[in-house]
Length: 259
Image 1: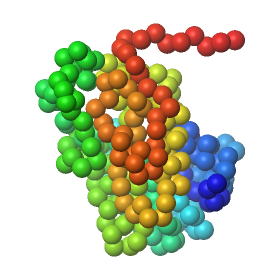
Image 2 (image 1 turned 45 degrees about the vertical axis):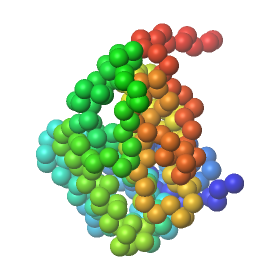
Image 3 (image 1 turned 30 degrees about the horizontal axis):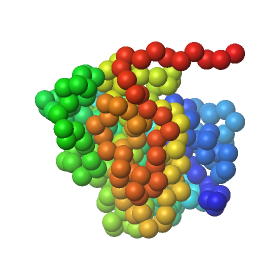
């Protein structure tokens, strides 16, 4: 049984931060760092682009789950939240002696590969046209972002590598697939990159509780989808991640809820 931890979750008012944070709170002491209050959770209200203001939130914390992010196209928003804000989170964690940061990265760091012919049948759910061996993106492929957001997330991964190597912090980066509120794929590409609520919760929890010997790594958080082109074997080998869900076909009917 994992030791009870004090965990700071940023962006807990968002979908993924909320899912992971509330699950972690069942067996840990969870606090939130958020711009607005999070119901039922002790919240430090602050913007992560202000280092001095956010520092108190990190006191006595064992692990940080960083899910706050700016998703828009404005370069200023990307710089403020996904570059300066990410630096502030790592630096505040370092100063407070936090042992582990779980960084919410994104599949957008490698989405440029989806333009290549070998990946198009998977992205478009033309699975009969997929050539064997199936193309697969691993944690070792060079980053290839599809825009500013992906580039900023790649910066966060590189910054985490620096803090791990030079400051002794364990940093685990999760390249999150497509997680949506309705927990169901919306289109063919989503059917390949889909990550269920249960699977993103599992991935975050396994990263938080990973052995101390895991100093730095990158994992893809996707469900076991028929059209999947992001590797999950590495996450299984290192932290025991085994997806609970997956999209077996496309299009597919959504099951009716009982009751």
